[in-house]
Length: 165
Image 1 (spheres, one colour):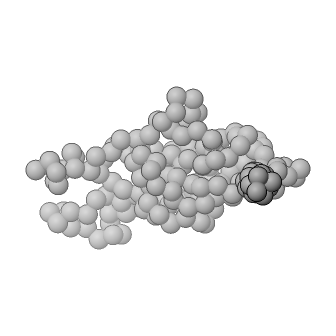
Image 2 (cartoon, one colour):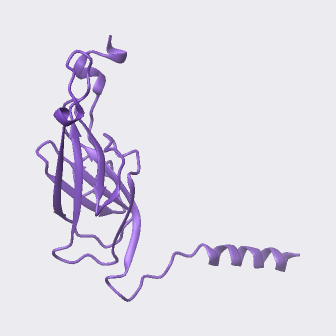
């Protein structure tokens, strides 16, 4: 009985072993992608694409996963990704605008921050259309994270709507 329990534990532990890194430095490594919007006004970013994949919105605290991303196993100088997003002014009944009037598309080739291991890739979109792409094992709330801290954006404060009325 004890041998069967020990065998079950050994099988469980060996099946949970992380995959070995490939000897090919260009072998793709998959991971999740989370985008964050740092524009302080009541604009929003939706959708966001990286290398043609994605399609969700940029959040304000990094709590939502946008999609998956594939990067080479090892970072190299000159590594870039293509980021495309649409920034829109909020739609309000007192200032009617069409979607074409309120929104604009931006597309850029963005250098990827150096990395050793990839857990989550963080995409930071700033007000001036600057973008950081940081693959990391740490997040923006960690003191050793190499990029910007998590943004704060409260849509209710700006216009006196919702909970602040």
